[in-house]
Length: 194
Image (cartoon, rainbow, N blue to C red; front, side, top):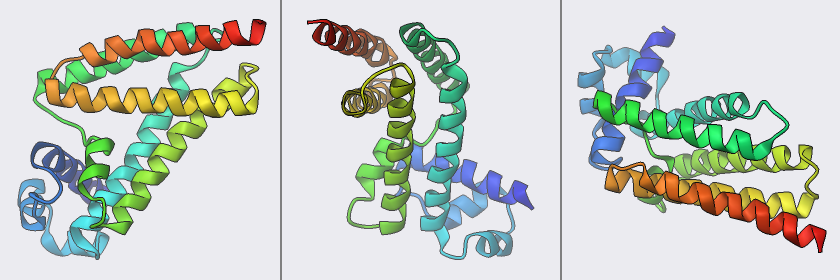
């Protein structure tokens, strides 16, 4: 039974990314997923909106797993370098295979004012990723206020680069922000030493 939920969420995520949330209908999700209509309504009684929100929650788990596996050493800049290599490779795999993933940024923007359920899921996504980086920075001896500021900056830069990457179909924005994020750390180190 869990396959029906997974297949439905994956199909919907692909369609939302390709066409947008509002241009994707529940009937299309049902048809392209190949799942029985009754089962989809059983698992998702609130329809497309619930499918989208659960897709965002599923993405939180995936992203946190990915981030936790990317930051294993005591050298945060080395781990950041590996993170950007993984993100770039991940993007290439999706583009090369013709697959797509739902951009949380695009979903957030498209559903502002139209879906409190999806907006709450997107908010939880950003809070979770921000908290991951904040906790990581505190573990690396950054003071709490500075960790909060840096975490927000990192998440904003990465999410902005994702939007640019999707629109340009190029990983160059991800490459460009890597240097900017490293500069944030160098500026912070210089400020704490003076």
